[in-house]
Length: 374
Image: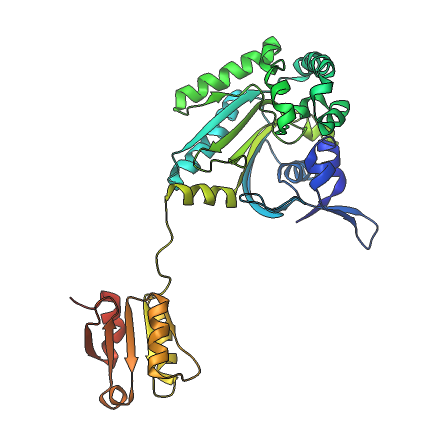
């Protein structure tokens, strides 16, 4: 949950994530720490610190924290599942990482999503493009929002990430990075595209896609869920960060990875109804109008047998307990009264049609697991 502040300040000083959203503080030892806003920086810091054998492939599930206004699909604490692969520049690894995330979404049952793909080039491409982009944005600075004018002074590329309505038209007419790729960067991007075709992963070129942090180079990508129908529709994405390890004091080591927001992905799953929650969380409800001890034992036995069971407490009346059983949504209610105790039986009531059956106490669990016969 905690990370050195410098890990993120170094790799995203011109981004909203670091400037406006990251929680940071000084601990009792005088160290400046941050609640981790994303996972890649920490993984690469660990790589630089421990130098594992490459290619180093890792995955993680972890909470992230950002100080922003909560809304649907956007939370101050959210969780990500992520993958990082460090140690090779091979564009086939880009394809492998992207295809893995695509396969993950398909395994969940999602279908209404799209893959957006772009390249941010190598250092040579970036320098040329930033010069062209800066001149264009400065020529249209009067049309930009005040926030984007501030961003322009720090990093022109970050302006392309703005969703503010006054910036939209300027950004739409801005020069494209993929039109300024070096021969090497262009060949890398071509190989990624041909590789995605080869493994059957559909994509759309999104020339304005820059993602939210400064460390991205070459391939960048984002999966968006059309089912969410809002500005917060990205369910996962990532890209290359070939200079990040070196920026953190390690040897030049290329890498690529992705992060997928679990809460946002679950919203997309709900929107498509891929695995709807069961209508009830209880299979059987125990009503004990004797002294509660029978409910205690029965509920424990049912749960041990894999039956989702619940019961009433406080020795409430038969009427009150039956109301609670009905509200629970349980398909079966098990009733224990003085007569059942005397006969060593339990009355099973099917709640849908009130059909009842009396069964021996020792066979209750078996009958419940099979379901009350019609």
